[in-house]
Image (cartoon, rainbow, N blue to C red; front, side, top):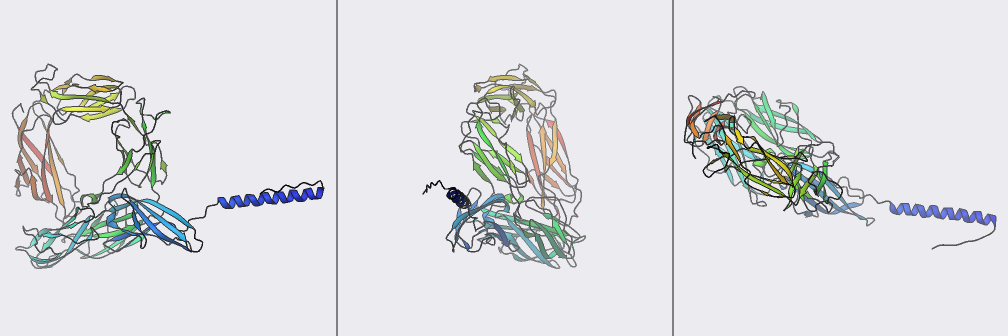
Length: 628
């Protein structure tokens, strides 16, 4: 409503001017008051509580303002369907996957006095172990009779072990399916004992598992380290751990889901455990040993709250690269609905039925953003059907940030048109530079296709049948072999030019190879495991023929006397425990191919940390048939 006044009296004019000013001030104050949004009184946060074997993730209501209550809680774990709860809002540790989890809590709140309502949200990245099982056991030695008392931590929260099995290390196993066992050995000495535990996860339908092994000193007067007391001092997002054993351990280590080199435990003292800067939980392994005694290992549940840890955010666009130059330019539209996902690896993945991983999708402009932890992860794009990648050279970025800020520019360029280049790598036995029926095919050749405009280089290999293919965005490319699995190899032609500016199929782009070296075996000794006392240790002899002629021979692995051989693959390997050797008669190996010969060992738990293992290998070859 508006009021209109008019007067010719000076005093009245001043009065109405003053009244008008007051009314304007009143209107401005009202407008300002109406635009101030009341603070939501139900702050959404997550806190982790638990004992030594299990834990839960709870909605933290300590920050709720007076008069406010939460009446509905919604949990979102990775890409799973929401979990709705109305009281005691909690999710258990095994509902998170092994690895990094995106966990969101949405709280629906109301003020019982004012009848106001609001919604509060909280999102962070949490490390977890899934439903992996962590078995452990203690022993009481009475002469040659040993009493075993086992337990486990982690695993599916709802359920009981379906399998509990001790391998006593003397060729016998338990049959009672119990954690408590008594076993009498025929002879005193050092025995490696394993405890295996399996549990069915009724939610995932999978079988969670875990295993633990350690050496036991058996006989009158034998000594075995046993942890008697472990506790921690959690300091927000870090932890100090104190362990005590009898007899006192003199050396040891911490083992984590995301391993970080750091401090070792000290008997009876608190030691800081170096852990990644990501909230969540971990069952850290604490192991210790002493001279003349066996090692012991136990797992301890560590709970790390967020303590204002803010995840980083990575963003970018997925766009239709109309000119195939890998740069997002004006006029190039974005693609909606493209999946961008995060993945990584952790130690618990091998035992858990629940794997972590989460994703997001691009919006109508092709834009996406996604949270990442303070740790290295892979950010990948799921290529849309009917498109090829123009930028970057792979579908994955490796990202590692710890600033809690935004990191833009992680773009993916795609094209609806494509260039398909295919051909073979072959052994040019008749030296005619042509692929003929009967020519031997050559696997393992690395080839590159280089875009002559953008300079982007794409890679591929010939497969077991010698064939290769590139699926590329339109453009002009130079294709050439860059690494052939033959010694002193020559090839024809040295390169091929493909003009594919409008896309298309380009087949029979073949490369013929020759080598002056008849047979040459390259032998590598590799392992994917760290040698740890009390655990199994795998060694692989990788034999690669880089010559021109197929051949076979004898392979001899000289292993360190500290190792105890358990099994070999292929099974024709002959173990000689006196000479500490394993000998295989190899199959004939064609040019460019490789074969693996594996041996599984156990490293006794009594082995001092820092011991150096010496393993060597030799191969004695003979000519075989030049033809496959």
